[in-house]
Amino acid sequence: MHRTVFDDEHEAFRKTVRAFIESKVSPVYDQWYEAGIVPREFYTELAGLGVFGIEVPEEYGGAGIESFKFQAILLEETTRAGVSFGGSGVHVGLCLPYLKNLATDEQKQRWLPGFVSGEIMFAIAMTEPGTGSDLAGMRTTAQLSEDGTHYVLNGSKTFITGGVHADRVIVCARTAPPSDSDRRHGISLLVVDTKSPGYAVGRKLDKLGLKVSDTAELSFTDVRVPVSDLLGEANEGFSYLGQNLPQERLSIALGAYAQAKAAIRFTVEYTTGRSVFGQPVAQFQNTKFELAACRAEVDAAEAVVDRALEALDREELTAADAASAKLFCSEVASRVIDRCLQLHGGYGYINEYPVARLYADNRVNRIYGGTSEVMKMIIAKDMGL
Image (cartoon, rainbow, N blue to C red; front, top):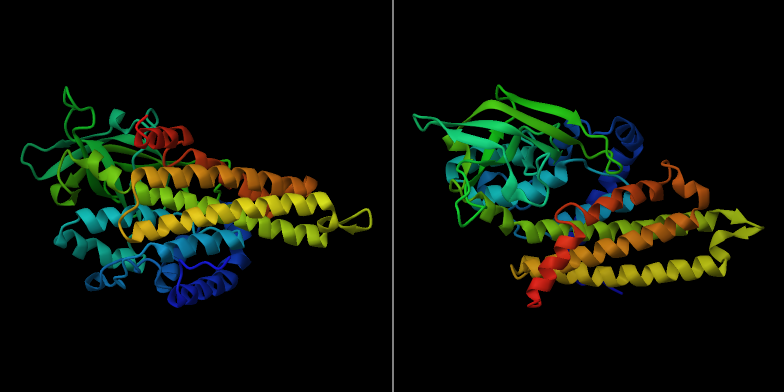
């Protein structure tokens, strides 16, 4: 079916991104995969393509386009090629909304031009070793100094995507204890300079998948953070975190859909070229039926993400809508990729084949951004249950 969610401008951008991947990324991607990280200088090159500034207001060096569809195309094209741009997805998809919505004019002048140029790469640090979905239980603290000029940050974070290369990290920390009536009270967002004394990057975590997306442990020991780097109002951080969750969860749904679609593409190529018992694997009825069933599921996922994309651009995407899209697309992708790997036979288990990497990359979709179980709770609550 013809997709109507993208116009000619979007498709021109898609061609540019696809050509960039083919010339600049695919030839060296295996080296990145072995290293487990994207070279820092690549972000400057990516910034030159204009991808960091699409949604940034023009006065700060961006294009000022209020649409998530360009980010959706980036997700689709990187996945189609079986590559990753590392932590840059967090830089734009997760961090930029906080900067646009919460930063003061002075903060935007300091941070957004560097954000656009790739000079200042951002990450966000929420999860701690002892807290996952229960963010209200975080123990990282930021104590306001007696003279009121800075916070003293202490604690640790884990699973921080982009944490190795980040120049600034939006750190969620307790600036006040929880109140008797609200465990969520007292959390604030601080934009921490990673060059600050006491700030340390620990292990680059060895993950099952998403090998090229650097994921780090961070620690803070008496890190001084100027009050001018407080993002939004003090103690209101938890409410801010909830505001961006629908877009974050839609991006995961989009990624899952793109992974499933890419798996079919890789499997058609493989089964067409691979012969068994004197004929291509693609000619066997089982192969045709399996791929046809996968195609039907991916078509349904495409309809879900396209509808959600339109709703997001209209500012109508609800928490339940995003949860439903994430739940459905991540489950579809898990089934489709598993079936596609099976059609590769033993080669599907070898990491040099894209379907094997997709299999490992896909599993986290049902965990991060809120587990599938949490998504079901959100949907059920919306149903009045």
